[in-house]
Image (cartoon, rainbow over all chains, first blue to last red; front, side, top):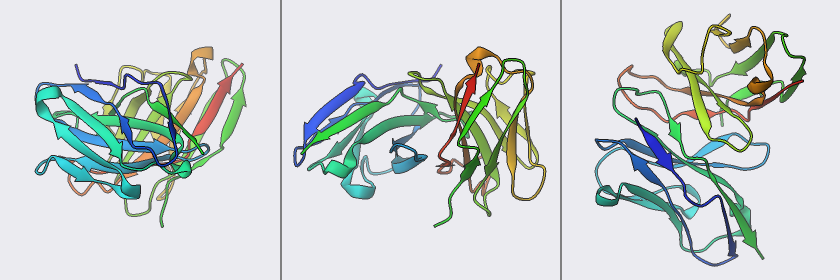
Length: 114
Length: 117
Protein backbone atom coordinates (compact mmCIF):
# COMPACT_ATOMS: atom_id res chain seq x y z
CA UNK A 1 0.00 0.00 0.00
CA UNK A 2 1.08 3.55 -0.62
CA UNK A 3 2.31 5.60 2.32
CA UNK A 4 3.80 9.01 2.79
CA UNK A 5 6.00 9.95 5.72
CA UNK A 6 6.81 13.40 6.99
CA UNK A 7 9.11 12.72 9.92
CA UNK A 8 9.12 16.26 11.30
CA UNK A 9 5.92 17.35 13.01
CA UNK A 10 7.17 20.84 13.85
CA UNK A 11 10.12 22.84 12.56
CA UNK A 12 11.26 26.28 13.69
CA UNK A 13 13.61 28.43 11.65
CA UNK A 14 14.75 32.04 11.73
CA UNK A 15 13.69 34.39 9.00
CA UNK A 16 16.27 34.37 6.22
CA UNK A 17 17.50 30.89 7.06
CA UNK A 18 17.27 28.02 4.61
CA UNK A 19 14.57 25.41 4.95
CA UNK A 20 14.22 21.74 4.12
CA UNK A 21 11.07 19.78 4.93
CA UNK A 22 11.40 16.05 4.56
CA UNK A 23 9.05 13.68 2.77
CA UNK A 24 9.44 10.01 1.91
CA UNK A 25 7.01 7.79 0.10
CA UNK A 26 6.51 4.09 -0.20
CA UNK A 27 5.36 2.88 -3.59
CA UNK A 28 6.69 0.39 -6.12
CA UNK A 29 6.75 2.69 -9.11
CA UNK A 30 7.30 6.42 -9.47
CA UNK A 31 4.26 8.18 -8.12
CA UNK A 32 3.00 11.64 -8.89
CA UNK A 33 4.26 13.92 -6.14
CA UNK A 34 2.82 17.10 -4.66
CA UNK A 35 3.53 19.62 -1.94
CA UNK A 36 0.65 21.64 -0.48
CA UNK A 37 0.66 24.46 2.05
CA UNK A 38 -2.13 25.38 4.44
CA UNK A 39 -2.35 28.69 6.22
CA UNK A 40 -4.86 29.10 9.07
CA UNK A 41 -8.42 29.33 7.75
CA UNK A 42 -7.29 28.60 4.22
CA UNK A 43 -7.57 25.58 1.96
CA UNK A 44 -4.65 23.53 0.78
CA UNK A 45 -2.66 25.42 -1.85
CA UNK A 46 -0.42 23.61 -4.30
CA UNK A 47 3.23 24.66 -4.09
CA UNK A 48 4.65 22.31 -6.67
CA UNK A 49 4.22 18.97 -8.34
CA UNK A 50 6.36 16.32 -9.98
CA UNK A 51 4.98 14.06 -12.66
CA UNK A 52 8.03 13.16 -14.73
CA UNK A 53 11.13 14.61 -16.36
CA UNK A 54 13.62 16.90 -14.64
CA UNK A 55 13.87 15.85 -11.03
CA UNK A 56 14.52 19.40 -9.85
CA UNK A 57 11.21 21.21 -9.72
CA UNK A 58 10.56 24.88 -9.10
CA UNK A 59 7.31 25.87 -7.45
CA UNK A 60 5.60 29.02 -6.32
CA UNK A 61 6.80 31.36 -3.57
CA UNK A 62 10.44 30.38 -4.12
CA UNK A 63 10.02 26.75 -3.12
CA UNK A 64 11.71 23.89 -4.91
CA UNK A 65 12.12 20.17 -4.59
CA UNK A 66 14.36 17.46 -5.88
CA UNK A 67 12.88 14.04 -6.49
CA UNK A 68 15.39 11.36 -5.47
CA UNK A 69 14.16 8.01 -6.67
CA UNK A 70 16.93 6.06 -4.93
CA UNK A 71 15.91 7.52 -1.59
CA UNK A 72 12.16 7.65 -2.29
CA UNK A 73 12.31 11.25 -1.17
CA UNK A 74 10.75 14.48 -2.27
CA UNK A 75 11.99 17.09 0.19
CA UNK A 76 10.78 20.67 0.01
CA UNK A 77 13.43 23.40 0.10
CA UNK A 78 13.61 27.14 0.21
CA UNK A 79 16.90 29.08 0.29
CA UNK A 80 15.63 31.93 2.46
CA UNK A 81 12.49 31.73 4.56
CA UNK A 82 10.13 34.67 5.03
CA UNK A 83 7.88 35.20 8.04
CA UNK A 84 4.87 34.72 5.76
CA UNK A 85 5.98 31.12 5.07
CA UNK A 86 4.79 30.09 8.53
CA UNK A 87 2.11 27.48 7.82
CA UNK A 88 1.54 23.76 7.69
CA UNK A 89 3.08 21.86 4.80
CA UNK A 90 1.82 18.58 3.40
CA UNK A 91 3.40 16.28 0.88
CA UNK A 92 1.14 13.94 -1.04
CA UNK A 93 1.31 11.32 -3.74
CA UNK A 94 -0.99 9.91 -6.36
CA UNK A 95 0.01 6.38 -7.16
CA UNK A 96 -0.75 4.46 -10.30
CA UNK A 97 -4.12 2.87 -10.40
CA UNK A 98 -5.85 5.32 -8.09
CA UNK A 99 -5.40 8.39 -10.20
CA UNK A 100 -7.60 10.76 -8.28
CA UNK A 101 -6.69 9.72 -4.79
CA UNK A 102 -4.11 11.77 -2.95
CA UNK A 103 -2.24 10.08 -0.11
CA UNK A 104 -1.03 12.69 2.36
CA UNK A 105 1.71 12.84 4.91
CA UNK A 106 0.68 14.04 8.35
CA UNK A 107 2.10 17.50 7.76
CA UNK A 108 4.92 19.63 9.12
CA UNK A 109 4.12 22.81 11.01
CA UNK A 110 6.62 25.55 10.22
CA UNK A 111 7.26 28.39 12.66
CA UNK A 112 9.39 31.32 11.55
CA UNK A 113 11.16 33.51 14.11
CA UNK A 114 11.75 37.14 13.17
CA UNK B 1 -8.85 33.72 -9.38
CA UNK B 2 -11.49 30.99 -9.20
CA UNK B 3 -11.58 29.00 -5.99
CA UNK B 4 -13.41 26.18 -4.29
CA UNK B 5 -15.81 27.35 -1.60
CA UNK B 6 -17.34 25.39 1.25
CA UNK B 7 -20.22 26.04 3.61
CA UNK B 8 -20.60 26.16 6.49
CA UNK B 9 -17.14 26.83 7.87
CA UNK B 10 -18.13 25.18 11.15
CA UNK B 11 -20.98 22.77 11.86
CA UNK B 12 -21.93 21.48 15.27
CA UNK B 13 -24.36 18.59 15.49
CA UNK B 14 -25.66 16.00 17.89
CA UNK B 15 -24.69 12.38 17.51
CA UNK B 16 -27.15 10.54 15.30
CA UNK B 17 -28.18 13.61 13.34
CA UNK B 18 -27.78 14.00 9.60
CA UNK B 19 -25.49 16.68 8.23
CA UNK B 20 -24.93 17.97 4.74
CA UNK B 21 -21.68 19.67 3.89
CA UNK B 22 -21.71 21.84 0.83
CA UNK B 23 -19.08 22.69 -1.72
CA UNK B 24 -19.00 24.77 -4.85
CA UNK B 25 -16.18 23.49 -7.08
CA UNK B 26 -14.43 25.61 -9.67
CA UNK B 27 -16.92 26.09 -12.46
CA UNK B 28 -15.20 24.34 -15.38
CA UNK B 29 -13.90 21.43 -13.31
CA UNK B 30 -15.27 17.96 -13.81
CA UNK B 31 -13.67 15.88 -11.05
CA UNK B 32 -14.69 16.38 -7.43
CA UNK B 33 -13.37 15.00 -4.17
CA UNK B 34 -13.96 14.89 -0.44
CA UNK B 35 -11.20 14.44 2.10
CA UNK B 36 -11.22 14.66 5.85
CA UNK B 37 -8.68 15.36 8.55
CA UNK B 38 -9.29 14.21 12.09
CA UNK B 39 -7.45 16.45 14.53
CA UNK B 40 -3.80 15.44 14.73
CA UNK B 41 -4.06 12.90 11.93
CA UNK B 42 -3.40 12.80 8.22
CA UNK B 43 -5.67 14.19 5.54
CA UNK B 44 -7.57 11.13 4.28
CA UNK B 45 -9.31 10.55 0.98
CA UNK B 46 -13.02 9.79 1.18
CA UNK B 47 -14.43 9.78 -2.32
CA UNK B 48 -14.00 11.03 -5.87
CA UNK B 49 -16.82 11.86 -8.24
CA UNK B 50 -16.78 12.12 -12.01
CA UNK B 51 -19.46 12.26 -14.64
CA UNK B 52 -22.24 12.14 -12.03
CA UNK B 53 -21.05 8.98 -10.35
CA UNK B 54 -18.60 7.89 -7.72
CA UNK B 55 -15.25 7.17 -9.31
CA UNK B 56 -13.53 5.80 -6.27
CA UNK B 57 -14.21 5.59 -2.55
CA UNK B 58 -12.08 4.68 0.41
CA UNK B 59 -12.80 2.19 3.15
CA UNK B 60 -13.88 5.12 5.31
CA UNK B 61 -16.72 5.97 2.94
CA UNK B 62 -19.29 3.50 4.21
CA UNK B 63 -23.08 3.44 3.88
CA UNK B 64 -23.59 6.40 6.17
CA UNK B 65 -21.87 8.65 3.63
CA UNK B 66 -23.24 9.78 0.31
CA UNK B 67 -22.35 12.41 -2.25
CA UNK B 68 -24.46 14.28 -4.71
CA UNK B 69 -24.25 16.95 -7.34
CA UNK B 70 -27.80 18.27 -7.05
CA UNK B 71 -27.37 21.03 -9.59
CA UNK B 72 -24.73 22.44 -11.89
CA UNK B 73 -22.72 24.11 -9.17
CA UNK B 74 -22.98 22.34 -5.80
CA UNK B 75 -21.33 19.16 -4.64
CA UNK B 76 -22.51 17.81 -1.30
CA UNK B 77 -21.40 15.27 1.26
CA UNK B 78 -24.13 13.82 3.46
CA UNK B 79 -23.46 11.95 6.66
CA UNK B 80 -26.65 10.12 7.50
CA UNK B 81 -26.23 9.43 11.21
CA UNK B 82 -23.23 11.16 12.67
CA UNK B 83 -20.94 9.52 15.17
CA UNK B 84 -18.49 11.13 17.57
CA UNK B 85 -15.62 9.86 15.43
CA UNK B 86 -16.93 11.80 12.43
CA UNK B 87 -15.67 14.99 14.05
CA UNK B 88 -13.06 16.30 11.65
CA UNK B 89 -12.22 18.95 9.10
CA UNK B 90 -13.79 18.04 5.77
CA UNK B 91 -12.15 19.34 2.60
CA UNK B 92 -13.71 19.50 -0.81
CA UNK B 93 -11.49 19.61 -3.89
CA UNK B 94 -11.93 19.76 -7.63
CA UNK B 95 -9.77 19.22 -10.67
CA UNK B 96 -10.19 19.85 -14.35
CA UNK B 97 -10.70 16.19 -15.13
CA UNK B 98 -9.73 16.60 -18.75
CA UNK B 99 -9.23 12.89 -18.91
CA UNK B 100 -10.32 10.17 -16.57
CA UNK B 101 -6.87 8.63 -16.76
CA UNK B 102 -4.84 11.78 -16.33
CA UNK B 103 -3.60 13.11 -13.01
CA UNK B 104 -4.59 16.73 -12.44
CA UNK B 105 -3.84 19.26 -9.78
CA UNK B 106 -6.58 19.26 -7.15
CA UNK B 107 -7.79 22.63 -5.88
CA UNK B 108 -8.96 22.58 -2.28
CA UNK B 109 -11.56 24.55 -0.41
CA UNK B 110 -10.96 26.00 3.08
CA UNK B 111 -12.77 23.15 4.79
CA UNK B 112 -15.75 22.63 7.05
CA UNK B 113 -15.04 21.80 10.66
CA UNK B 114 -17.61 19.26 11.85
CA UNK B 115 -18.05 18.78 15.56
CA UNK B 116 -20.26 15.92 16.71
CA UNK B 117 -21.41 16.11 20.33
